[in-house]
Image (cartoon, rainbow, N blue to C red; front, top):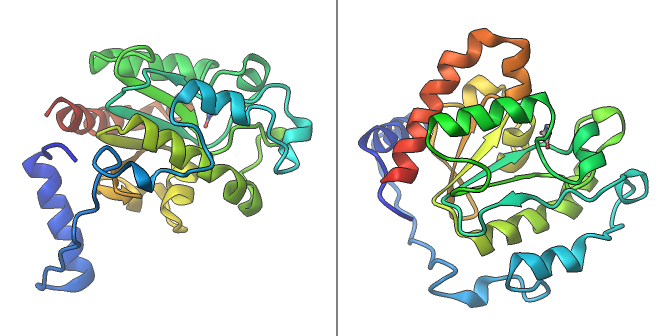
Length: 227
Ligand code: URA
């Protein structure tokens, strides 16, 4: 893990104090995958292109039968930032690419504001690779089939930071049932990689009042990945 801002450390310590009081428990740091490639899932290939080839015809859950396209993910294979949404919507299902609708266009503008793009230092994907019917929330069995794919993508990319977009992506990755507001503003951990939860761009289209708070989150995100 790269350097983390003083603000992020303060938030982490405050959160730990609320949970555990004044005693500080330190985990033995996990060896990174670069240091110890044995941690990588041996059933999956060691580059993103071959990984896509291996899994893009997946039928491990019922969504494999209803999807149009498998939405693997797009972006820089060496990105320092991985953005994770909940699941493809209608446009993404037709195109095979995440965040291509109006929400995706807003996301592109937010990324431009931190001097990034979906080709430059960013990788975008979803918890689920296939669209749930009528855009319903992911089901537990779908998540348990699909999440190992996401974990392997993250292991291959080795980002500095993961950002979960929206409450559903956040609560699924953190395995908690909490409102977005109580997951925001905290540096979480996802299998050894720091993770932040922020608003979903589709929520910002419905509620532009949340844009200033989102901008605060993205300035924090920028400070972490620029460090
Ligand atoms: N919403 C998501 O969570 N993911 C997409 O790819 C598109 C919309």
